[in-house]
Length: 446
Image: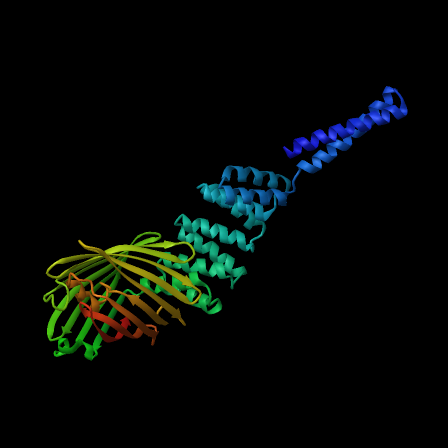
């Protein structure tokens, strides 16, 4: 509309000029023709200047159309016009390859990226683009080849090093992947994605792991006669093995709770279902419901989200003399050297729905097993062996707790973990006491 109005105004202006000049020179047709031709020529140059775009302008328009409108065909048409003016404009051709990638046109995308790399083998953006293309299409060997070629020209590239770590992890070359990502974190300690990847590699690469832990709970005098017998000890031994699509863990727990002794056997599994989706599955059985639930089970799905977020949704099942279902949801976020996790447990019953909440923070000062941990929570957690027995009551006991912990790799294969929590807990209806829980864990990987 703006262009139409401009043209109409320009034509009207030109006609006025022509009539004024005609009056000045008379009715001689030859002069009228010359003047009109000059006006038309000037006008056409003006219009051409208004409607023609440079290749840079077309490139920016194409980006806007692709990102804001998600209209890839229209964006491609603008890119083709830009390449018609500047066929060797590398950024435009890389963007064309990206458009082909997003449109699932693998061969055309690869052709665009290779065109740029043939002209400029050290062009980092082209290397990043073709590495992404190969990785997303599960061509890991090819992706690694292009990534290594790029690192020859840019050995300290933060993006290329991160992509190399991801590719090596996908190829299950865990030692190499861990080494690459560890070097990356040393160079760029605020890289959230690298720290998240390092934890995943560490988890995957530990094919065998044995751990021994001891939890001791001390109760203050507010518990009165409730504590005439000994406090609570839990000793756990577990063995985990990475097998194919994930880890499987077998665990034997021994509990001594106020003079009641029991064993519990548990199995955990962490299968990887899809590229960004994994699961947690648990089953346990015990010989004494005064210490552990007779049966327990659990399942959660974990989804990796953009910007280093992770979401969880699942359930826990505990059976004492009665059965209790608990539903769990959580959100985690990596930010620089921190991992934040917010979690909620929901327990429905006949009268009302009870809720438990917790918020924990980890501060990483090294690798995946080197961190400080702090937490605060309200209510009970079915994943805490020290609290799970409280779900045996129909009345939902209340509690508030604060916790702190420290975990450190002594060597590449040895890890220790220390933690302490202070809990103000309701052990009978409207009767509260304080509990201090300490935990020591030793982990050996092989």
